[in-house]
Amino acid sequence: MTATKARTRRLEIPNIENATVRAGTHVVQLTNLDKVFWPELGLTKRDLLRYYTDVSAALLPHLKNRAMVMKRYPNGIHGDWFFMKRTPSPKPEWLETCEIMHKSKGLIAFPMVQDLASLLWVVNLGCIDLNPWYAKCDDVDRPDYLHFDLDPVEGAGFDRVLETAIVVRDALTQLGMAPLAKTSGSKGMHIYVGIVRGPVQKEVWRFAKTLAKGLEQLRPELITAEYRVANRPRGRVLVDYNQNAWGHTLASVYSVRPTVQATVSTPVTWEEVEAGFEITDFTMANVPERVRRLGDLWKPLLATGRRFQLKRLMGRT
Image (tube, rainbow, N blue to C red; front, side, top):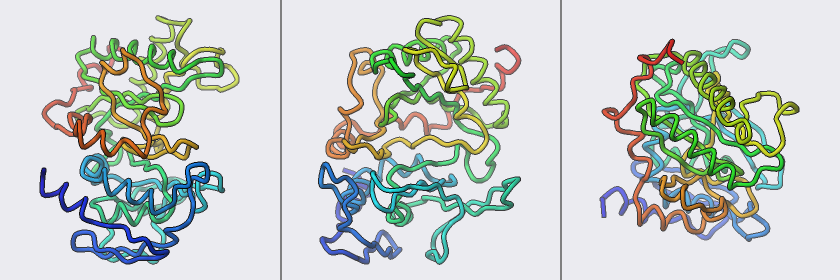
């Protein structure tokens, strides 16, 4: 057991409506902890905060030094939700921000989740899932991963998503990459490849589009890369390259999703993908124990020495 994990488990979210907790050297105000976020399961905002506390040791390295796009559900999964980019005021003096220039809205200071305190602060705003920027704050236009969102079109079951994941994996592996997989926690899967920073976002997006279109031609009975929803053929799986577009985000690894079952975007092994599973196999109730048992299956995505040099493929796809 590491010291970090021990400290994480000792932090308690109290059984009172509003609480002040100390996370490391910072104090965080938590509010409306009794509010029910999942009526069907009887789960509250407190339960959500406890979950993120439990998985924080594995989660935080994947969020650190990245702008966080806040997707807020202040009244739970069935209430109105909204995106928020600019850090709300007032904010704790210790909260770090990342400034990104937007053409339409000027310079926006996004919050960054750098530690357990800032994680609790963001989740307390009603953020059920976490949506980090695809590049680190010191160079927001140069992604350090390439990713694909596999989304079933109407008429396609999750078995087709699993089949598509293997097709995408094989294509990336043939190029010399080491892709990692996770459930989206919603309907599909996410495939990520750690890349060496260098190509700008538009170049990464262009590469992803070319690959997705190629897979569509290779397996037209299974895969579509059609951007327009109305034109996507029934029963196919969308290999969505457009999540690499500027400003787009995906739910992070270990994010709880606003589903009735409180499913979680969970790292899976390729052996598990080949054997098959269901999205609902991974929930807020069982993922913390899975992480304690298996560790962070996406730790390789953090290793700088294992990143793929995408730049050398530019112009070949």
